[in-house]
Structures are given as C-alpha cells and as structure tokens.
Length: 465
Image 1 (cartoon, rainbow, N blue to C red):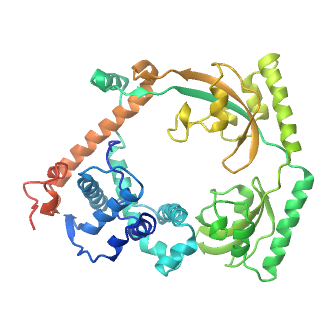
Image 2: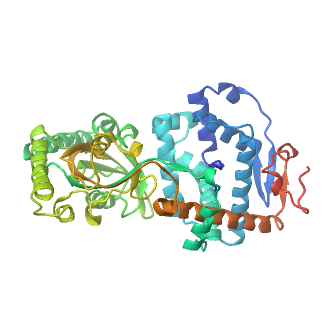
Image 3: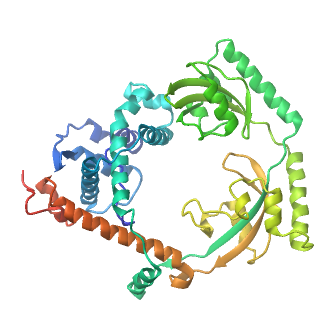
C-alpha cells in the first residue's frame, strides 16, 4: 500500500493496546467511561466495531504520532480493506499454518511485553497466564496473516520493466522530485577478541554454582532475573517463547530439544554467546518453549589490545604494503558471519540495500567515516555488537554520494521500488473495485462523509442501516 497510508494492526492485541494506552498515556477517562459500542461496518460476514476504530486511534496518540482531522476515516478505510481481503481469502481457500500463527503470536507478545515491562505485569493485568492470553489473540493473528497472504497473492505477478521505471520517473513533476541525503557504502573486516582461559573458567564456575542452586530447589526463573546476562530474556525469568528447529544457534538448540518433560534441566552448554543452563517449559508439537540463564566470560583490556594489534598488522598489509587485498583479508580473517562471505559489505537492515544515510550509522562508524575519502581504509575501530560484545574492525569506504535531487542514474533502484509499489497499488484498486461489487458492504452513515470511504459505496450495497 502507499507509504502515507495508515499502518493498521487491526484487531490484533486490541485489549492489550488499550491497556498500554491507559497505563502509559493517561487515558483513564476512556477506560472509566461507559461508551456504547456498536457495529459501524459489515464486509461480507465480517464486522468492524466502533471500539476497534477508537482503540487504534488511541494507539496513534499513545505513540506520539501526529494525527489529522480525518484519521478515523483513514483507520476505517484500512479496516474495510483488511476485512475484504479476509473475506476473499476464505472464498479462495487461502490458508496459514499453525506454526506461522504461533511464530507471529510469539513475536508480537514479546514486543508488547517489552512495552508493558514484564510478563508478570501482563499476567497481573489480565489475571490470566501468558498461554491463556495468547489463546485470546490467536484468532486475530490468524486473520491478520490471512489478509496479508491474500494481498500477496493478488499482487504476486506484478513486475516493472526498465522502460516502465523510466516512464514513471518522467511523469513525476520536477518540483515534486524527492531530495536524497548523502549516502555511503561500507565494507568491514571484524575480529572478535579471544577470551582468556582464566575468564572462561570463572564464568564456568559461576554457572555451575547456579545450576547447583537450581538442583537444590531454587527457581531458575528467579535466578535468571538476577544473574542472567541475556538482556532479551532475563527480565522475563529467562523465558524465550516458542521456537522451531533451526531458529537458535546449534549448541543451544540441540540441548533444548533433548529436554523431554516440563521442568527438565539441561547440562551446562557452551554457545557463541557464553554458557547456558536450560529448563523446559512446554513442548507443542515440533515447537518448544524454554527458559535459560546465560553467563558470559568477561573480556579483559589485554584481550582487546591483542585484537587491535592483529588489525593493525592487517591494515599495514592492505593499505601500506599492498601484500594482501581487502577481499582476501575478509575471507581469511573476518569473524563476522553476516559479511564474511560477501566481501565484507555491510547491508542496511532498515532498507535491505547497501547504502546508508549518515544518520543511520552508529556513532563508532559515523565519526570515522566523516573524515575518510572513497577507497580509504580506516584504522582499527572499537565497536559493540548487537549481542553486547566488544570487537574491533577495519572499515573500507566503498562509495559516497552527495545530497541530491532524485535522478535515474544515481537512484534507479529506489525509483524502481516506488514504481513497483504504485503498480501494485493500481492492481489492488482494480481488484477492490471488482470485488466490492459482489460483496455485501454496509457502512454506518457517520463515516460516509469521509472522502476515502465513499469509494466503498456500490449500487447494490446499502450504506444506510
């Protein structure tokens, strides 16, 4: 859909979202008032409630988003489309697997737990267990995935040719061409410090004592909150949520799937992250949920200096003596699995492209790149990885663009993406026009003053109740 359209989560997490709004943005009056709910739209056999619209509106306010006067109209428009897609998905026998539903449910539950503060706070609010809460939202998740699958099915064959991209660009008024900020493309060689055997022994001793305390009756969940060095799960008592085979690092996964019954405790296992103890919470088919404690061997300043010296040597070989190419050094020495096999090229996780705007770079890169020239290699740069580990890297500035107005030569791939989106939107609008003529649609008169809602009117579908 077009970028300026409202991104709706629809019915997903309605009550949870309302709880967040009330707790964090001061909408207590809304919670205390006795608003009379009603059906404001019907699409096929799918209904939209006035409370659905209001809850989504309050979510926008709670996130500090600027909302226009017609925000309720935009929300209604998107909800009507979602219901239309869902109704058609059922007609076309579109399906999503239980594993897909479970995975998406786990992901979103973890996100909302992070907003509320903890699993315990969520359970306290609902007076239900996490499993019971998940069951409440399972149907909404399935509906959302079905609608997304239906939309993908409608536009799956849409492509754009180079000629169409050029024509699309020529039709953009010159005064409407976007302005792009300066961008850079980067490659890196990363070396992770080797932890000393002494530090490994200290970490092993610590986790062994924790395991003994669990065997003597203490709860792993309590000890995880106090001692685990996994920031993503410690506050939740070490719980990770359901996962399938192939989703965790091998050593961790192998130990997890060996556990048979709830409460079973693993031996101490070592992964790339450190040392773990695992406890099985639940098995559900081929998916399991475990909690764990992570203890990381601590890195010393000596370990870091040793790593820096290695990269100083590589810098000399590449940039000064020319006895080794950058690509050869990446393949032979880099410890970063994400870039090791593509010449060290960094990928922008926000866009999926290799270009970064300067304000998208972390501080350790920004101040280094700011003074470099294209083709130049940096000295060793200390940085912190996504997992909290300190490492050193050499950074190569591969290319750099200046701020400029959009043009085909520099921005072809961007323009192609926008042209494809526009063509997909055109396909969706044609599908909607055709489908709504054979679908029962009823919309409350209060919304028919909205310009974007009037397109939902048909000759055969009443808008009066």
